[in-house]
Amino acid sequence: MSKNEDLHGNAPDKSKVALLLIDVINDFEFEDGDKLLKNAMPMAKNLVRFKRKAKKAGIPVIYVNDNFGKWQSNFKNLLEHCLDKKSRGAVIVKLLAPDEEDYFVLKPKHSGFFSTTLEVLLEYLRCETLILTGLTTDICILFTASDAYVRDYKLFVPDDCVASVEAKENEHALKYLERVLKADTRASTEINFSELKKAEAHA
Image (tube, rainbow, N blue to C red; front, side):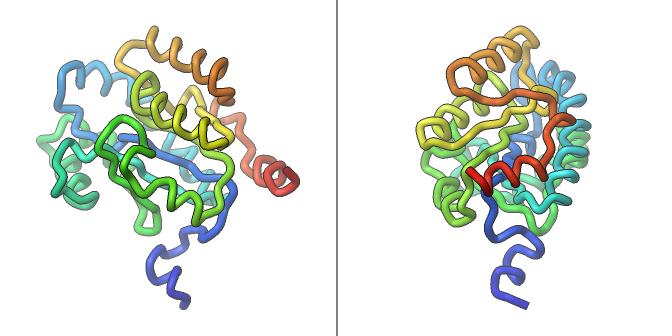
């Protein structure tokens, strides 16, 4: 067994495509958390299937998650907190809990790139295309996508695997992502990983 297999199980060591799950490990214990949870449930069910499909295709999965403003926290502690039966978001976290081999990055602010190790990890994986999913389309996904765009990553934001508090804001954000950041917002069911990997290999 190689050193990488010891550390990451079956996580791909090199891949031009990566799937990012943003802020899905969430307790939803905040203002409008109940509204976001309602909108996030259909997204979570779609994302479960999409993540399974990605992993089957050998695409690495990276959880990019808020640290809840607790600088001493770690991902395991956050996961345990959000899985607690008293947590409003436990139902979604159970659906989308990471597998042992998945990567994770904790972020202190809205963008997954700001003051995190995400860029270093993506360079290590040699990624060129990022698929952004999770919460929320009009805030953390938009900020992360903006930072990814200026770093020349190709972007996918499947419209059935993201959610916001307000449906109208979600729609506006998707249009902005598509128009300004050149993101492909087709549904997750329309993304063919084999074709995507082939296209990247010949790019």
